Image (cartoon, rainbow, N blue to C red; front, side):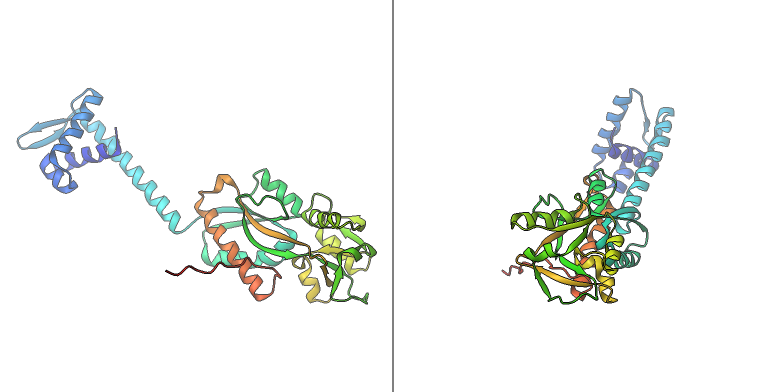
Length: 313
């Protein structure tokens, strides 16, 4: 039994004849008769009484008519609900964001989502990058901002790249605008623990160039690390997003690391099970827009991907 057959059957009963139903449904009369006969054969009972003046439903036909109306009504409601959701996404979307990125993008993302997607509720989970990556792998988020360096990006979307810098107390000159990688070992560091992307990114480059670091403290708390630098108890190696507020208030300074520059990719990952989710897809389109706006305005120092020139015929 097909939905089309149910629709035809209801149409014939409502019209009272095959001829009128054929006109109303824009279907050949012979096709309607064929489908009704198929249903009668499948059920093993007569559904319609055919007379010169028209058709009427049998007892079995009346029962089928009730079920058919209910089924077609439910199908219509489902279509309307799904179509409406596609036009106006609704639901909850959970996003995992590392602490540094969260500091610069969460407020902008929430404001844009409130404007564009009023029926979508965003749930933001902030944490150190290592934890965010582990939780995303475990399927705890619909979307996540992740950091990658020399690793497989997979199906993630690369949003931008950002550079690392040496973070120093504001009252400890002299410092130039840049510092060579090989000179970082002069400064006692407070850094995230080994699973964190900051630690992995820096350690990989340092090892490749035969340099060393003086790691005094391993702390999985961005606010604690920043406070230690502000108090002059340590230095750190972070990205500008992590300490932008403190830099603007002259609480810490940043010194660009060069020879070589250390960078990492900022990527947007989606949970595979949510690839077809309407609300997740809607939020997924907002995040690159937010990142681009922050980069263009200078509020998040990033290197945006090069835009390929359009091809003209």
